[in-house]
Image (cartoon, rainbow, N blue to C red; front, side):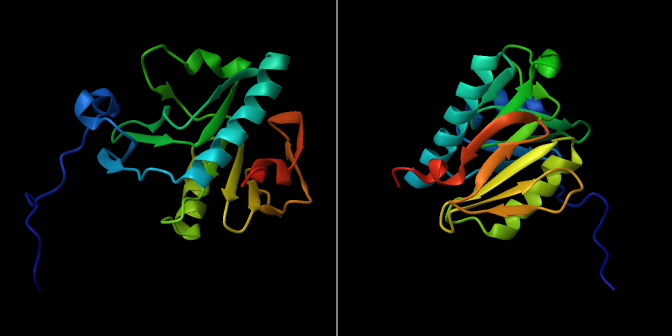
Length: 189
């Protein structure tokens, strides 16, 4: 039986702050200390992310509920080894804005994370990301599939709910007064 030596070619584990260096320009994440390059998004995926972010931003800022972020903000979900994920859009409640330090990644999870599936991604990988967000304290995840034009809503331990264009997407329990028709996310595509 072959045994790998303990000094085998294990990847060098990085710290979250390494992602802020110029050589890592572009979309990157860190999974347990290992750098992971994210793929760029095609137009429709990016447009849906922008719609979700815009609708959230309008709702949140009008009511002074917290902060909305886009796909260039890293959330440090774990340390030692470090895990940094990036949501396509996210919301942090005003009560939790203390986790935001200018010039740094956000230490901790957002209250709401939005994931938009890109064509090269499998739906299984999106489902895995939902689980990771929820396991690290996100209370609400919207997973959007542009191809199928559905939104899968995950709230903690509740069973996921699949919504189509005619359904209403709400932000409960994180943003209880947020309500839009799912079709608004796909408008113009």
